[in-house]
Image (cartoon, rainbow, N blue to C red; front, side, top):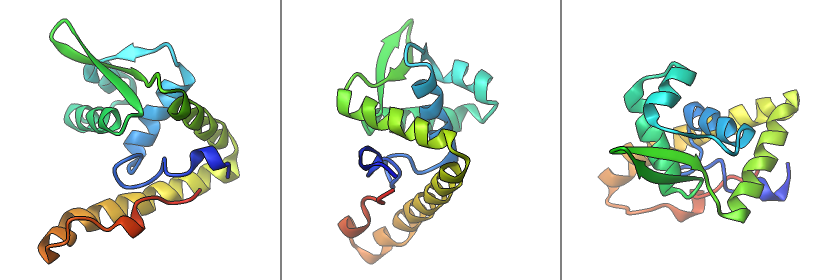
Length: 136
């Protein structure tokens, strides 16, 4: 896989299939600006899960978040480096073989995130930097 995709699929970045679907939606429609409620209508997922995923993607710098009419609105980041990496990820997703690889990496990132959330705090460890990014 291409170098620009490195680190995108990792705990705290794209670490769930829902986040992958969201970033691919925004990458496919870079002009798109929507709220969690609109995303829920498009993806038919739990509104709370979508709101959490959008917020986490914005905190990771992959989406931009603004307030409009009292609710958060999201769009693809304006940071050129992140946009390029997301575009490369979307192109990779178009290849069926790479798509399977991406799904496997997202599942691995999801498992790593769950591990960090459950085990590492109990051990008194604040972070495990050696697991911060998967190279894809």
